[in-house]
Image (cartoon, rainbow, N blue to C red; front, top):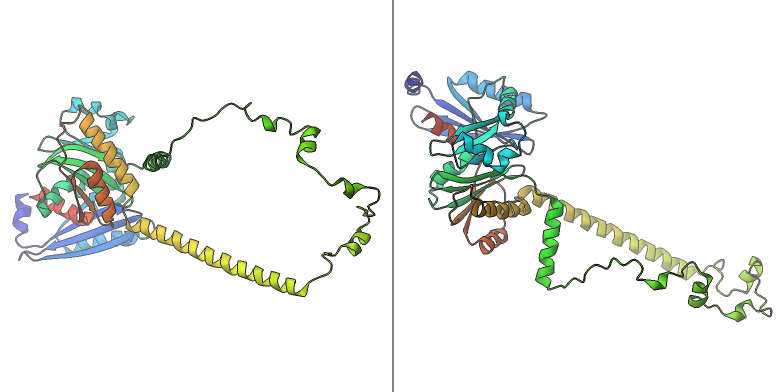
Length: 382
């Protein structure tokens, strides 16, 4: 290490931060010259079709720079953070209990008395992907809030941090630099969301629901539908229509057509033109309606790509705060602030909803996770 420190005086350091999200590897590079000047650059590669290009890019960096450090952010689904470093306490936490293979869990203690965890299989998976270039560090995302807090000089009070990206969301609660609670946010059951939303709408509109009627014998009026008496009571036809004096022969089609004043065989030219015009008008209306529907769907899709997952984040906050305040596993304190860390868009109405519902100050911070990974490299190297 002393040799590296000595070499840093003469050679530039090159940091590479990588994280995978929504099918793409996002990369930020930081070149620190011996003069102190810093250069940044950003890149993105599709994980399926541009992987070889990414490795060529990383190999080129390593061949051109003597001091190169590559770090990858762990985005695996089974990971989290615990407010303890005692190995015997780890199995008490529900997120540890749910994993079948305890021996596959990798714990790493933080010097301030809390831990992060992931799986050995996930670490090996990341190392295998980058085996052609090598990885110096694999960082837990639960270290990100401390970096952000230091960069933006955020409050040291008990605060809720949410990292909200398209396919990656975590929730953590910190006081000073001490982690009190940490969870990886998995997808919420959509049926549960729909039920909760419907229940809320019913409450807001003051609708009173009657108990469900399960008595299948109650609708008596349908009991006689198969009896001839049912049709006798409900259907009445003019008796004169079938009288012997009526020379209308149901089976004499030619005669009936001649006697009919509204025979469909006698075409009305004006009516035909009106029908054609009406059909064309309906066709145009259907076309316009379909176009509007497609535009609305496209707008919704674009919004989903640009915005955070509001339902998921709101549900996560509800579950997280309930666990934090209600479980004896966590040393809870009143949450004063909420920081949403994201590169996506957050509507002001959503911020207001959180403030109103949970009574803490909410602030949205625009961040680039691959750049924050670079900050973690700097902290690790000292």
